[in-house]
Structure formats: structure tokens, C-alpha cells
Image (cartoon, rainbow, N blue to C red; front, side):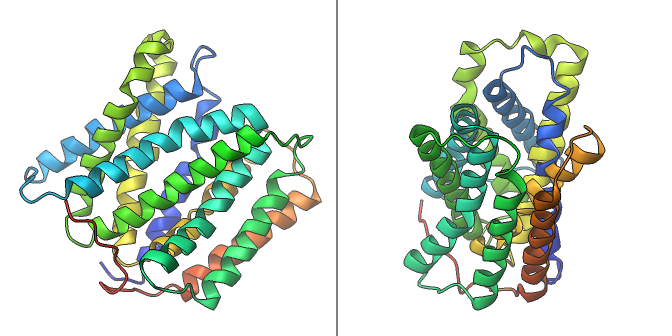
Length: 297
């Protein structure tokens, strides 16, 4: 794969993630957001495992279990932390803190652990993107900042940043399809208890399993496979900033499919998000093997 395509694969993954919220609006009313998150990871993990075995099987010889478990735990923690943060402190604050903090946390982790200082292009694009994200969301509702909700949103941002950094190392050593298949299968196992505690009867409904299939196959399986392929050539901090295409997509789907209204501030925020992402796509360069964090398992 040409390294010039890698940023676009990340953006494509983020676009798929951005359809998650719209898809969830069509789920049965009894479907709890955390239950949907657990179900989508289960379907996504099974889908990815099926692809792995269809393409020749999976070899776990010399598999880095510590790094894999860390990535799986990070992704499993992201689901309840993000959904709970949104419930506690509102969609606007929860989304902005979680998604907006992830690029900054990722850049700082790379700086500390990889000894690689983020570029000026990354700082500029991240600033534009986060500012755009703030303008896009913070005017949608009355803002009530709940400290517990903010902490959970920061935890979600940290979880996604850690997942990106660890996955960046793994996809440099093993096939990206095998990596995401194992990671998401483990993540689904970690979240399985929620499927026994929460009401899952809605899955039996045609609309319910249809939504779970879409979320599991497209927004989890396909999206994270694309994200993993892109990480082969793109640093984790760059990838997490590019992933801010997710809220942009979600907002556009809300306008054109759900009939939501955006004011001038939100549209300006969209433009800033586009500028930030575009700047990073143009400036993103392959980093080869020089910027990988080693987790031996």
C-alpha cells in the first residue's frame, strides 16, 4: 500500500465511525447505549475473525500478548467511559472532551514514550480541528459541566489514544487484519458481562439485529481494519487527529438525514475541522519503523 493513501484510510474509518450516532437513533428504544457498544464489538470481532480464517488462518506463535491485551482493554474501556460521560455531562461536553482530548493525549504520549516531538503541521491542524469541534458542539445545548462526566470523557480520550499508540506498534510487526481481529475479540469478551446485566431482548427485533450488524461489520470491523492499515504508515498522533473527521461526519448526517438544524457557529466549526484535517492529510508523511513503541509480550 502506498503511504500516501494511509491518511485517507484513517479518514474513511472516521467517516464510518461518524455514522454510529445516526445508526443508533434507528435502534429500538430499549437498547441501552452500552449494550449496543458491547454488541457491536462482539459482531465486529467475529466478523474480523471470519475474515482472518478465510484469508489463511491465524498464527499466535510469538504473539505479543501484553500489548494485545492493553489494546483490547483500551478499546473495551472506551465504550462505557464515553457513553457514560455523554449521559452524565451531556452530549456536547462529553463528545468535545473525549474526542478533543484524544489527539493531545496521543501527541504527549508519543513525545514522552517515543521521544518524538509532534510537528508544527500537527500542532496547527490539531488546534484548528479541536477549535472546530468546540464550535460545532458547544452551542447545541445548555452546557452543564459535571466533573465526574468530564473525568470519564478524559478517560475515554486516554483509552483511544493508548489504543492508537499500541496498535501503531503492533501493525508494524503483524498483519493488521490479524491484529484488529484478536484485539476486538478480546474487547468483546471484556465487555460480555454487560450483555448479561443489561436488557438485550431488543436484539431479537429485526431493526435491532440489523443495527447491530451494521455497527459491528461496518463501523467496527471495516472501520478499524482501515484504521489499522493506515496506522502502518501514519503516526498515532496524526491518526487520532485525522479521526476528528468522525464528529464532522456525525454532524453532516444529523443535518441531512435527521433534519437537525445548525447555526452559523456550527458551520464555521465544520469549516475549521475540514481545514485542520485537510492540512494534516496534505502534510502527513510515512514515518516508517522509526516511531514505534515496543511492547514485548
